[in-house]
Image 1: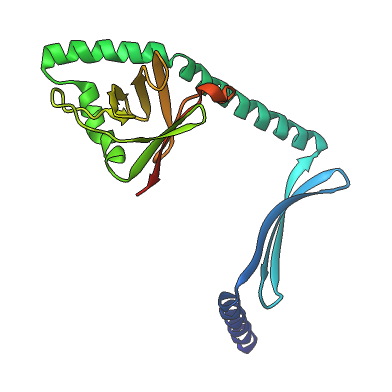
Image 2 (image 1 turned 90 degrees about the vertical axis):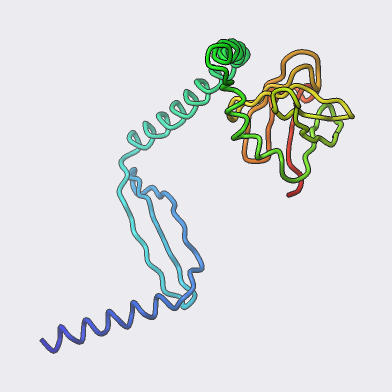
Length: 207
């Protein structure tokens, strides 16, 4: 009983000491030991103490198959997203038709309802649009007719439609329909990554 009590006290003292120390390293890596692979998790503390755990992952074939599956899965996920984005012009046309039909029948516009929610992002801070090496200040005045906001740059207001995290700009900054996606809050970009001359970035530069 006495030995058990001492062990409990020592454990409690060790735990309290560890809690007062600062973690200086927290890392995970994979090691190969004779063709068998282990994931090592190591935590080091400021007093020199450390804890380390090794989990068996498998042999060479298992690890190889895991990496094959990882690359294939991520590539297929990106391909599926790209295929969806490729059809975006068709989808926005369908949404516009649905919006017109719904507004005529119900006297309410679904797109206006969506914009009422998503416009808040654009009504705070200072924004700019970047295109073809030129940066232009952007503001978002509201139309008096349907109460939707528009994008205004260089003194001209342009039609701007929000479908959620997808935006359509009409004939700006180049002729035709331009679709932007919200990469993160306050940062919208089109998918012309490989063509810098047609890449468009709309971003908030300050709050």
